[in-house]
Image (tube, rainbow, N blue to C red; front, side, top):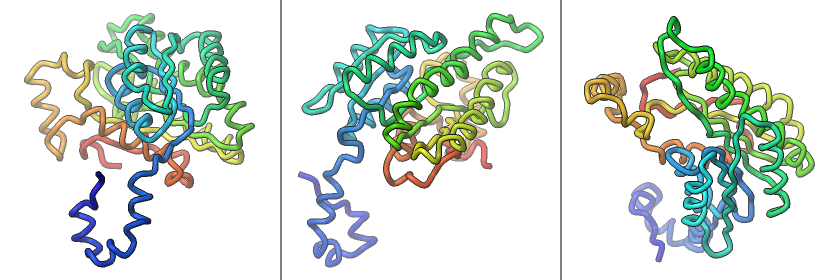
Length: 277
């Protein structure tokens, strides 16, 4: 049974809360995304999986795409519950036809698309002088071109619905830069510009587009760092810890909700204070 949080009691007073208890119960038990359909690219693990879980908890049907179909299917199986359905699809976001097929399959299965989270991303780090051209191209293709393909493919449906939420997962590195990550930083900086352009182009159709820029998050990408590097990062973060995938998922969950309906073209920084802009 859900109970009124003690923090609410301290802030609003017990008598006031008791008088509006039915309203509070309705708020606590409603699912903000009930019946909506959300696509999360790279949704099988790490930040993408946390995002998928958070949207599912809010009542959304999930389409989890990944280049690793078995992992995507495992996550989809974990999320399927009651009236909420989950669909796992294999899709390479760098290929336009693969993305178009993924969107077509989503529409066949659910008949609508309300949310797109462009989360798929990779790194191929190295000092610029030694960076291979193929490493530059691969990072740009996945991180930027992938978002282009996915966004373009859902816009017609969202425009017809006169509603849609697009969230692109950028990075702190796309704003401040980082040595050894010229390709990654360039792709994420470009993704922010892309987000703002989409926001301006499609606001009149009821579509919002925003970016979430994570700081250093405790995922497979950062777990390979040496203890010395991790300690050095911690010293740069005022909150004194690396982020966790749920920190990013919380921001995405808000941006795709009705409460964020007047927010578009923005970059939400989730970095523990490492970068303040």
